[in-house]
Length: 255
Image (tube, rainbow, N blue to C red):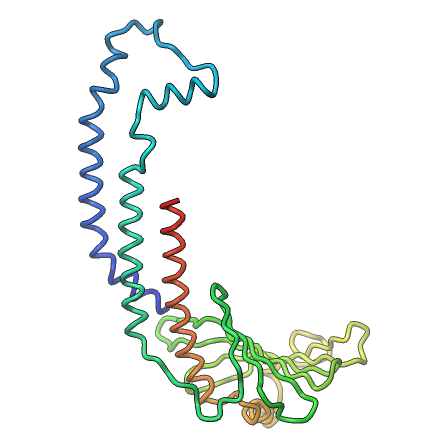
């Protein structure tokens, strides 16, 4: 996954910072210890006053350890690590190449910050009365294999006639993994081609039929130029979302 490079690169930077801050925290702790316990050692144990109410507990805590009102050294360690991760994530995002939309790209993109998917809606219908939208998921990176994205393509012919394709999209290749069909003939308006006793798995369909469905999607804009663009787009989105998530973490720790 794209995040691996960020995490690996920042590990060497984080370790010395954590070691230095932890060492400083330990030193401060030991220098304060005699002060905290000197009063207790000089008094018999039966004279120790135990707070019995919330207000007295607060006064007791404030008098015993004023440092509790301020962020601890370990909070500062966490903040420093998060800040280093943010720097690395932003640098990685800046290094990512900005790819222009393909010529005559037939979709408008809806990209909502914080979501792990984007939605494409076809601007002009391929056929009159037809609508089409595509849900694009974050890249998946498998070992010894090129990363890919998954698509859910929905072609609506009318309110009750719908094709829904589950696809795997590499930058230069696309395959259909599943197909479901919605018609007005069934009581629940859903006859699924995938996983149903009435229909074979899409992979078991005749090769000519599989190729025809691939062409069906291709002429509607689901082609290699589109998938290559979407692959780069989602890699950049993944890095941006990770950077924004780290910034949210920082705000929570500082709150």
